[in-house]
Length: 212
Image: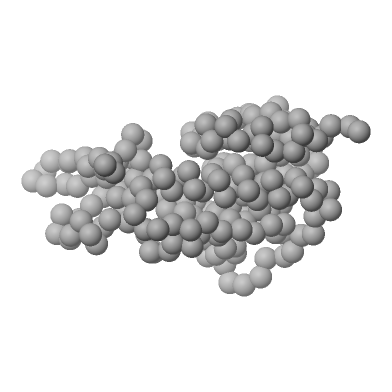
């Protein structure tokens, strides 16, 4: 039996999932040969799982590979686009959906193969949220590989929504509001890359949060 080749395509600027992937990769089916890449130009004739990727993949890339699959953490067609988990946390959502779909030229609009969920308690900080998110992502990949190539895709149904890109400026705290009312914002900040901050008397102050 010919071993199928699978590539996990990661983003150079958003590769937080890579350590989790390296720890989990040996738990996937032995029927496949796995590689990790951050260069889409070097990938051809593969089954590709696109993880936490922030760039748009062109039509040539989609045509040149056997399957291009995206794992998007939302109940599509809701929360398409950037930072879906963070935006849901900001809206007090604790049940987060995971959707595995076939990539298309239109962002997060392809047909759906598998759905799952993961649950937050409401006190997790960024690293804890990402750990749960990674586990849920690998679970739907494992389910997909167990069924492949006998996959049934379904069109997305319902009214969609699209999240804007979050930046470092999105993490500004309001000094006139309580910490409690802004706790969800503190939960999703990246202490190293995009810490929370506030402005006071023409100065800018950074806030770093860590759970004891």
